[in-house]
Image (tube, rainbow, N blue to C red; front, side):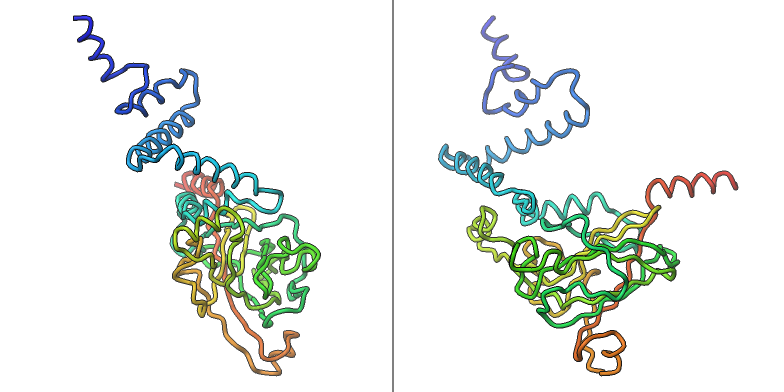
Length: 315
């Protein structure tokens, strides 16, 4: 009789570890005063990690290899390189988290990933300035407008831009080789919402493949190349920030970007300009590349609440 009762409890709520109910046993140990959100997150993670381990059935050696991989990944992180972000990127998780958190109204500029080489406090420039400080690459003029979803211009929007040089490296990857803040800058839209600056045509480049993430890509039979792009962060009071890229249409890696960052709506139209007079007007040697790209910002959640309140008062 006692044995039967023990067996019944073991199948449902035993506090002791057993393979069949392993996730339930672990999750049952959480305290009563835990934050509801933390409880939800940890319960789901434990459940799916245990399911994965049961499906994979790793050997001890394989599991310790996974632990070493995570340890060494963390050891590669420093103030300008975030190997864990890179790992999240190549697994498509960064793009998924971003998509979940940026479900925007139709017509608003879509987000894509931040990437591991964003640097705050880049130099501020007047519209028309050239952010290419090393003189490498094919000249490019970028211009456009920042508007709301109704098409109204947004003056004094802040546009942060950064990209690799023509050798395929960000400035922070080549300290002492590239000038500091090469191909980085901050611009402000004018009274009509317009902005423009000079740079160089972006080119495809490999993500850092000298670390654990690069080795993992190789082991999975994947290349490390990112499709050619310029990074942007566009912000304005009362609007949701946009973290995004624009991509060149002629890049061979558009359909297989290593971090899944390409969205069809972000592929821009880069045009080659041979007109000497136009080149003189913008201060570029001919030929040069030109791309026109408008950013459409959606109202922030707080701004939407204000609009809804005013509408409610009117009705």
